[in-house]
Each structure stands twice: as C-alpha cells, then as structure tokens.
Amino acid sequence: LWISKELWNKMLEFTKEIYANYGRFPVKQTLRGCVKNSGLFSQVGQELVDRLLDALRRKIALKSKGMKSGFPRFKSMERMKSLHYPQFGFELGEKLKVTPFGELSIVKHRRIAGTIKTLTLKRELTGKWFACFAVEQEKVLPRENDGKKVGIDLGLKSLATLSDGTIVNNPRHLLEREQRLAFLQRRLSRAKKRSKNRLKAKQRVARIHEKVSNVRQDFLHKTSTQLVNDYSF
Image 1 (tube, rainbow, N blue to C red):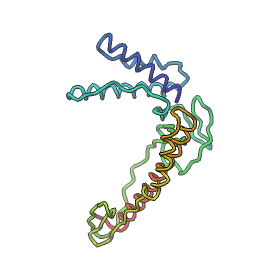
Image 2 (image 1 turned 135 degrees about the vertical axis):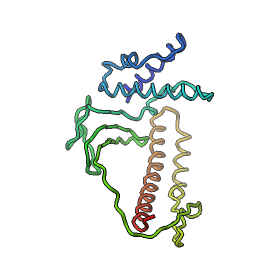
Image 3 (image 1 turned 120 degrees about the horizontal axis):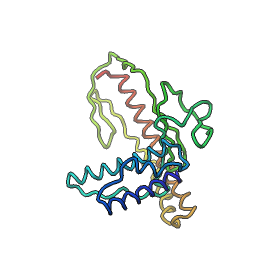
C-alpha cells in the first residue's frame, strides 16, 4: 500500500505538471512507464494507472457539464486501501499465494463456487485485511414458491409494515452502542494528531462502526430472506 501511495502521488504530480505546461493529460502508455519495476506486480501497477485515468475522465465529464471539479487528490496511507489483481498474480489453495508477497495465511469463511477471475486485497479502517474474489458462475434459475402477495411500507418508527398487518420492528442498532461510541470519539478528539494513540483510538471507533454495520446487514439479510420465503410477490 505504501508503494501504491507513492506511485499514485508521483503520477498525479506528473499529470499536473503536464496539464499546467501543455493543457492536456499524459496518455496511458506514459503513465504505465511510471509504475514499471516499482516492486508491485505489473498488473497491480497498471490498475493503479487505470484508477487515475478514470478519476481524470470524471473530472473532464463534470467540467463539460459546467460543474465545478478539481484534480484527483494526493493520497495518504489512510486513503490507500486496496490492491487489485485483475487477472493473474495470485493462487488460492490452503493458503493464498500472492505475487510478490508469497504465501499468506487466510481464513476462508465460505467455499468458493465457480472460476476465480479477480482478487482485491483490502484493508479496513480497523486494521483487518480481506481477500475479495470475483468469480464466474453458471446462471442458476431462482427458486419459486406459491406464497401470497404482500405490500410493504417502509417507515422510521418501525422498519416496515406489511399489508397483512405484520410489523417489522426497527432494532436501532446504532442506538444500542451510542454511549460507547460517544466515549471513544471523545478520546479520539483529544488524541494528538499523527500519534500512535490517535491511530489506536481511531481503530476503536472504526470497530464500533464495523460492528454496527455487520449487525445491521445481518438483520436486513435475514429479514429479506424471510420475506421472499413467505411471499411470492
């Protein structure tokens, strides 16, 4: 990630210089020369170039619509979060073999069905790392049931009210952890910037938000699964 951050900032600075002097952006081939022999796997570096070019295209598109748009931003380590392997450079067995890092011990939380196409190594704010695979699978027809029809009204006081009178309560996941979160955020605001204590405090806050997000997603998936099992329309 540190190498990626350095390459991004180097390419962005070069792009700004070219634009300031010549009024145009460097082409893809020129930027790819900046990431050669960098220490990253070649396709990872090339994907970093594609990210920058996509950001520049968005800037051009917004400007053409008359909307205000600045250059992409320089990145710190906190803003560089992932490495993307679009085709090659990795192999999954009992361990995950990744070029150029070697074999990494991982916890496989589910069996992978299908042909693996891409890999993204992602670092969360909590410091946890995830290996995210995109796979190609054969198309499977969805299951059908002979359930009833139902109308669903989403709300604030309750999460949803169904047309047959069933009410899905809003569990207020964030509210349960509000006091703990407020306490940790106060500690974070008092911590000295760029200190190790601030980094630890930031990770504690991130862990609370991660827990809330996970619990919320779990509840929503279970609720939606129950609905499609009980009703057909």
